[in-house]
Amino acid sequence: MASTPTSDTQTSQEPRLNQWLKQFFIRLIAEQTGLEIKPHDQEALDQKILFRTHVLQLCCPENYYQLLESQTIESRQEWQNLIALLTNSESFFFRDQGQFNLLKDHIFPELIQQKQTTKTLRICSAGCSTGEEPYSLAILLKQLIPDLDQWDLLILGIDINSVSLEKAKAGIYRPWSFRKVDPETKQQYFQRIKEMYHIHPDIKQMLRFQTVNLVNDEFPRLHSELREMDLIICRNVFIYFETAAITRVLEKFYHTLQPLGYLLTGHAELYGQDAQKFETKVFSDAIIYQRPAVAPSLLSALEAQRTPSESNCKNLDASPKSEGKIIETDIQLCENTPVRSSQRPDSKAFHTAVRNQNTSALLTEKELLRRAEMLARKKAYNLAIQQIEKVFELNSKNSYSHYLMAQIYNYLNDYEQSICYCQKALAIDVFFISPYYLMAEIYEKQGDLAVAKQMLKKIIYLELVLLRLT
Image (cartoon, rainbow, N blue to C red; front, side):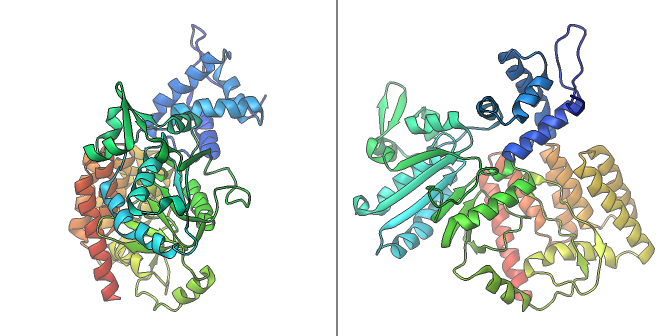
C-alpha cells in the first residue's frame, strides 16, 4: 500500500523502526488510547513493537501497524496486548495520604450526609490498575458507614488494561502494595496466605470492574454502570495523556458526574486544562473539582460580569499542560482582553518583560518566543533552547522565557535543570504561579511528596493573595 509507513531493514533482514514509522505508531497509539509517548520512552517503544511483531510471527513492523489500524477482532485483542506493555500498573494501597485524608475528613462525610435518605452512593476509580485504589476506597467507606449493609453502594474500577483488571478482580497482593498501610488495617481486611495477601470477601464483593477506554469509549450511557457518579477519582492517569485526550475525558467526566459530584485528580494534573465547568475547591493537602448544581450557562453569565483585567496580553499563560507539556499558545498583543483572576500571575510574567523593553525589542522577543514554542511543540528541543537563549540575550528578566526553558528540560527528563529554571523565573516574578505547579509535578514524579505538597501550599497562598487584590 502506498500510504503504509515503511521501516528500514538491516543487512541481516532483522526489522527495525525508522523515524517515520515510529511517528506513525506514536500517532496511532495517541488516537486509540490517549497515551503520549515521550522522547525518553521512544526507544522502549521500538522494543515493544518489535517484540509483538516477533510474537505474532509477522514479517515486519509495517504489518503490525496494519493489524493495529484495522477494525477487526484480532486488532482489538492485540491492542490489549500492546496496552499491557505500554501502561504502568504500579500502585499501592492508600496512595497519597493527603488525598485520602481529604476523602475521609471532608468529601465522604459530605456525600454520606447528602445520601442519608436514598442511601445510594456511586463511586468510580478511573485508571484503577490492579485495584489497590478502589479497594482502599471500600475499606475507608466500611470504616465510615456503620450501616453499610443497608446502602446501595457502587465502587466501579475501570481501566484500559484488561490484564491489570484481572489481577484486581483476584484481589491478591504482594507485601510491597502495603508500604503505606498500618499493620492493623492489613490484619483486619486481608488474609495472609504464604507470601501473598488476599483481600477479605466482604470488601471484595463491594467492587465491580470494567474495561473502559477513557478516550474512545462512549460514556455516560443509560444502561451502563458508568453514569450518575457521586465521585470520580482519576489520579496519575492524565500525566500520561496528550492534551487533546485530557480535554475529551474531562468533558465525559463532567457529564458522568451527578450535580454536586466530585472529581479528584493527581496533584497539578489539570493545571493548564480547561476545567471551567467545574468549581475548584482548595484544601490544605489537595484540590478537588465539583460539578456545580447550576447550569454552566448560568456560570458563564456570572463569569462575564467579572471586571476586565488591566492586562492587555492574551494567551501567554505560561501554564503547564499535564506532565510538563509545552504550552500551545499563540503569543500576541491585544487590547482590553478580560482575564480571570487565576490567570493574573501568568499575564504579569509577560508584562514584566514588556515594561523592560522598547517596542522594537518587544517584537523581537515575541517572535523568538513564538518560534521557541513552535519548535518545542514539534519536539525540536535543541532548536527551541537556542531561540530562548536569544531571548535571554535581549532580556534576562523575562520570567516566561525561563519558565518555557524549564518546561523543555522537564520534557527531556532533566529535572534538575527544569527546577533551576523554575527558580530563576520565580526570582524575577514572585507572583508567577506556573513554575510552582511544574516543580510540584517534578517532585511528585521523583517520589518527594512532602516537597510537592509544599509547592501546592504556596500556590494556594498565592491564589488567595491574588484574589484579594482583584
